[in-house]
Amino acid sequence: MSVSVTFLGTGGSVPSKYRALPSVLIRRGPELLLFDCGEGTQRQFLQARAGTNRKMRIFISHLHGDHLFGLPGMLHSLAFMGRTQELQIYGPRGIADFVSSVNRVVRFYSQYPLKVKEVRAGCIVNDKEYRVVAAQAKHGIPCLAYAFEEKPRPGKFNPAKAKKLEIPEGPLWKKLQTSPYVRVGSRRIPSHLVVGAPRQGVKITYSVDTRPCSAVVKLARGSDLLIHDSSFDRSAAQKAVDYGHSTSTEAAQVAVRCKARKLALFHISAMYEDANPLLIQARKTFRNTLLSQDMMTIYVSRNR
Ligand SMILES: [Zn+2]
Ligand SMILES: [Zn+2]
Image (tube, rainbow, N blue to C red):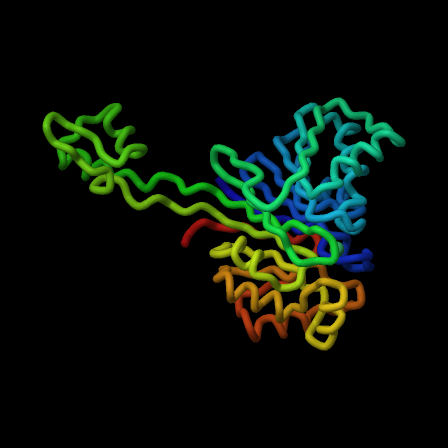
């Protein structure tokens, strides 16, 4: 199943002429996972042709307005566009109060079941084929980083080897892919003689509004793609400390520490009309870095 990431908004704190507020859409086959919902996300979401009635989960990192104020508009628009499927929202403590407060004053025309779950660090979604794990980032208020991680798939089955070992075709072939061994008469045949090593899935970590921290490094270990706060360039390093953010060099250092394959600089301050210096600085520490742009889509492969 293909996995892609579309950066719906890549700015931070306030929108700029070039960047909308933070929101990242992961598409896994027909399913959608939306991380943060800055103001105006609903329009970017439409432009991305994401589909309004798919299985969908929304994850909010923290309760600063730039990550959250798009949520009422998004919920409202989805209802208008005929959503009927359940929608699940996850976020830190206070997210349920935010949604119900807005709903109390401005009723959503909601025809779909809406569920809001307040979560903490740990595994928060354990689906059949993937999980989403949260960790506490280091910001002025409680802020969650999220890792989306596909579960390993069974290794490749080799029919020629199965035949050579005289394992009869049928249920035993299937069992080889799910059990450590099968029995054929008096023989006990280990599955690894026929089935390859489990195939690793894709891992994407979303970590915004944070100082570099070990909890995020641990969460993001081995990510195919790390999306990290990169609000400032090196010359504004003190601002990053003061406001609980990271420079692009610090984001690159996190990518090195967690052994990510690729880094996307994200949550770029509106003070940069040209953010290329952030990219140049980050690449000195971590070569495989890209500067996220609004509406940029990248495919994340599982070939490791
Ligand atoms: Zn922010
Ligand atoms: Zn914040």
